[in-house]
Length: 467
Image (cartoon, rainbow, N blue to C red):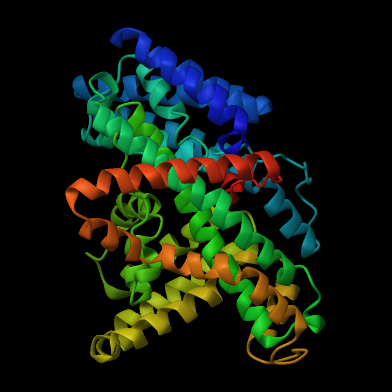
């Protein structure tokens, strides 16, 4: 995809920013909409029309809902909301899950649905959730209806976060769509944040991904215990730097355009429990499911069995949101079980345990979880997990493990360092006069290293493009 290519960095982005700043304020939403559509068309020609259809459906739905509510017809407004939600979910289910359901039914001998070989539109999970949040919030009267179709289209298609989030809810940027400003300080902050995200992806995630591929793609009979753990540890860091890197780039680009997006990650690997981890990881998705699924289902204001069912539904939806495969559903259920164990059995034990014990417990369970997430084939997944715990392993350690450890030591150490808030604490302790030049040097070095990586390396798409 275009987000990490030299053409995007040196041609598309400067051209869009220059045009955006040169145009008068009234034309800025139009520039943002057209550039975002061009950005999406660049990487996903076939389904640009689908996005335009989604914009029109939800724009019209918002107008209809607001008009019916203002006329004292809440039943009609609710019907309009239901229709829009059905259309949104219908598109998502068809393009993302049709073939999954068809293949699953065929696997049990029920060939009632044809396998269509549907190509998943990039970013459909993100922009569908965004448009749904808009119509629901208009119905709830949490936000005023957006009457300007260009401003609404710019919100849906906003290219900084269009493809892999964070999920920007309309009410979080409604006030910024028509009135925002960018000073030099905010713009510089955006450039720095964008560069940090790009470095996470190009310099860390891609290198860590090569380590993971070296263990994931070999027969489990050739794996050692240490190699299996090293591979999935690399994947645990890869997916963090890949996804948080995209979020950083989106937040940085948003600042350059005058928008302030909410944070999507808060050093999740510094968590000391699974509950704490999910307060820090993919925050925009967790908040979306909380506000638009968990609370409408009744939240915790109901009987305990109903509350547990609500949580189970949310975690099944969280797993399936990530992909049309049984391993993602299993991954969601895995975390549901862990969170329930912490809630009812482990909380007091964890509260009394030393900090290092809580962190070690959390990291081990997360690494196992990412193993489930990273291997779609259940047969291979079962064998890989078995090797991690000594079943069917070639040995505890072998040459492949030692070679990967030696060759990847630097990126693994830097990855662990960067995944924790150590650098942030060091930066915060710098004197105010030293912070600016240090960050400027880091910015130049980061841009140079990322440029060299883009020019000389092979293209590796963001992992979350396929979700």
